[in-house]
Length: 80
Image (cartoon, rainbow, N blue to C red; front, side):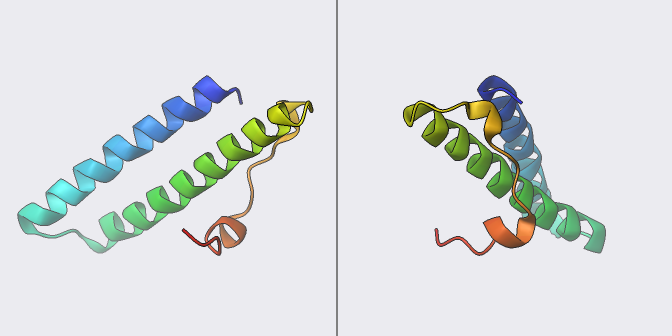
């Protein structure tokens, strides 16, 4: 996936995340909505990680296409 596609995916996930937060503020979320929110947050972490990998590879003069989406267990252990 190219950088633009990753940015688009991040924007989609952020919009959905905000919608769920607003819905939660108005009256709470169902269990499935809480699970979806958790999934969105993991997806965002993965997308940002992939974008960072691509940028680092590009800056090092390597092929950004070599970047791969990492497992949720990997990106969720990163320090913020």
